[in-house]
Length: 273
Ligand code: PAF
Image (cartoon, rainbow, N blue to C red; front, side, top):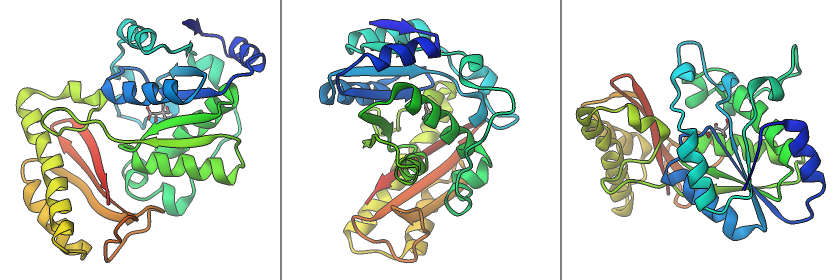
């Protein structure tokens, strides 16, 4: 496994590679969710590149950028074990320029839900993902569906900027009790973890309601909120796969999304129906 820190060096190496490339961008603190993306990339491509870069431009003032979990040694072991070919470890200076041009998330889709709670977050995500895709020019790039709106906006960017890459969405990985894996779960105390389990419980409630024929989104959302008692709800919404709010849930075209705060930790989760 090669570890490359220099952007120009990776661009040079990449130019000489003729194989199919799978790319998994991450911010490190790898867990089984990341591993599932990496394993899928390794299975579907001749070579896999993983990037580890805590991207400053997607964090808002007051968010956890400076204390974002860093577990580099362990991350490298996971990559090696998973047979990753190249780990890209850039620093901020080698990714960003002074007074550089900016990508803007589309107002109607980028500034609702996550984008409303974290304005300009998606500008930063799209900016860095576009750079990373241009540096690695992969055949396929892998993203988790837990960040559903991120996955949607990156797919939209790839389509609308005619990027020559297949954007692949991977299923959410949960622990034994149903909590969606996230690098931020390590912030949770035992008591907060218990409260966080209400998130998947309320998503399960929503899918049970749908299985029993309930499609009215207001009703589904209010039943979910009844379960989310011990957490601070930021939003519970039901959208179609183009992130338009729905009055009536559409089977095979809907996503039920939750964002909550448990103590100081912000958690998101969703279910695709
Ligand atoms: O999902 C993430 O970890 C980040 O948003 C990403 C896609 C690596 C961009 O920094």
